[in-house]
Length: 269
Length: 258
Ligand SMILES: Nc1ncnc2c1ncn2[C@@H]1O[C@H](COP(=O)(O)OP(=O)(O)OP(=O)(O)O)[C@@H](O)[C@H]1O
Ligand SMILES: [Mg+2]
Image (cartoon, rainbow over all chains, first blue to last red; front, top):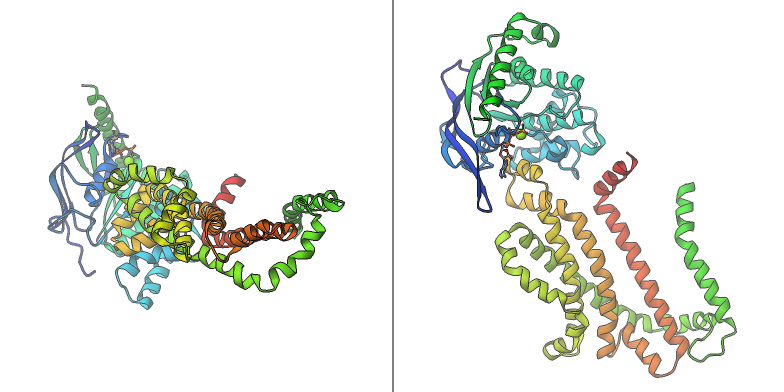
């Protein structure tokens, strides 16, 4: 892809007044009331919200896996109605998003085969991606032979090899231990910097959102709307210890924490 | 190596004990209907290995494999379609329940009306009986496909054929194999039964012939042969299963260890 990273204005993803009502067996449930935001090309956007706020629902709508009830989602100007080209999703449930009957290499390679990437280029992309996530040594293992953190790395490698314009991540590190989590955060951050990809990263961890994002979107409780759009003016270089102990980091954390608390309270009314 | 040896001993142990028991208990038997095992074993080679292997055993097995193969093909294709489509399921389920409840041997006289008493009839009986376990298990397997995995396949825009092969069939393969195993035993039973009705060759036919001719050791040797064929087919099936489901069986082993 030869898009250069233009700062600010060019929006790649537009979420316009999206509303999502689940209806199953006569009962209706309004998961998302009204979500309206844009994501610029090359941006790293984090979305935080309380559990059950509809974050996964939103991501599935953006990914074209779920129809919106009203409003629209557009990617690069085209309306999303089914999974669009140039988009990859990393799910929270890494164990369930890899094909257990395929090896690590085959898992990463499968989407490229479908894209009809020539074999030599494919091999190159796969080994580069595995290298990038630090898994160059286990291409012929099966996912279930690997630890949770490694499995999530495979899922990330698959997304990276696919060369998407936009990468959606749904609480990708919620189920790994703290040490692995910090490593994976730095991995995703460095991939974002080197690949010029747009990232929409969902999490319920406020610290993680501030650490990774250029912007944090705080969602209200279900039925969901955007509570606030918080810019993160931290220096671009990230370091787990130094960044997290900056006074600005702490201020942002308190601010967003208060917002999420408000979100939880407003549910009662 | 040691564990392998132990497993073999475990598997062979009980049969050896039973056969030995049969051998000695029946040794002095003078009953016409219960000949000594020694007599049965002695008559085995001349009964089966000269001629009948080709004229009876092979035709039986060919009919079994064709019927079973047809049942697998139809069962898997229909099972995948039904598993994927809610509408189709709602539409077909009552009919399937009814058809499944019918014991296949009952169909033999009916099928004879349409398909005559030749090979077609026997293949049809075997296929009709074998289809249910594999069909119903396939439906269950396809319905149980992991939602996250299905979403992954969709978000990477995998084509329909790829999704069928690498997602649907592979996900459902443990259940499909279970169904296929049940179908195989049903198939062997129906193979024999269909030959007992109206036939001019086949294992079932031969056994009935011996019984009518009061050739008791020969009849018993046929029963023995049938048992052996069942065991051999099941060993082959297990080897196939271990190969197709190697990923699944490994995961199970890992989970058991935890
Ligand atoms: N298929 C569905 N049918 C009906 N309701 C659903 C469905 N999927 C989700 N919901 C409901 O919609 C709401 C939002 O769910 P969603 O999974 O999007 O939340 P989330 O923010 O991702 O939560 P978490 O932080 O636990 O992952 C929840 O109350 C959930 O019960
Ligand atoms: Mg979620």
